[in-house]
Length: 366
Image 1: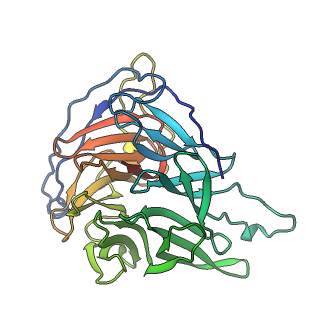
Image 2 (image 1 turned 30 degrees about the vertical axis):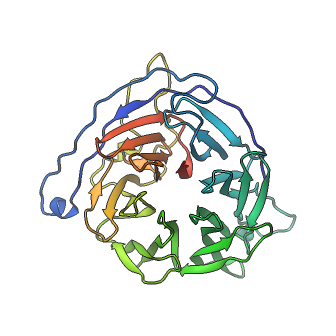
């Protein structure tokens, strides 16, 4: 399952990069030009070894190079809290409301038995719990079929329930005929419980801070939509239709529940800017990782009100698979992607690179 670790690494200090103001799809379609506000550019020095820093103990958590990593909000303290075996991947961590546990998705190393059909060698992904104090882990949900996965978990405010994606192939012989996508929830107790399906055909679920509402992504014939409903999946309505944003993913409620931040394909962003815009390295320090380059469609962060109004674009990075999490006070956003980890202050369009290594999957902040 993995092991807890306290290994640290020196990091770069904060750096500012350009961000975007509001963006109107209708205006662009009508030929109206967009003007994006650019933040100033600042390059900090190299962070110190060890942990802590001006923001105290690390509070950001995300997957990086297969392991789970904590990072302080100023980027100066980095700590691997769960190292996994070679070939395994831990990702999508989420703090429990009391900060004592972390739920995460875990894919063990792929094992192949003699005589197995190559068409049926599919990895499985489970949900596990990490005890922050002891470093011990235990399984919460185990995949129920070859190639099945439980991932992208989120906690209920009372810490008693976890919502997650369930994705599984429908196999006919040695051929994958279809895919099951659904949002499930499971009680967090001493043993393994059976998951309850909440939203059929949905994925990327997120709960509102008060636990009353659920947001998720659905694939349609016209593209992806973002829908909201009650925490039981009822009263469904569309907030982001396919015509508003392409490839929508990772919806997250603001701390006051009034709006959603999500990732989507970057309109009119040049392909070379899949990773952050080039920035000068200081004292030969690496400013941004090139590993995220050309891994997928360039994407950015967008915002929309809970009622579907007020659509705006928050960044102009063209990043690789970005996902975001709000700060505890609701004033900033942490963004993890293949090209780096960033902290954005939407009110001032200030976007800072706090970690050059980047990561994968979801990020959480407490």
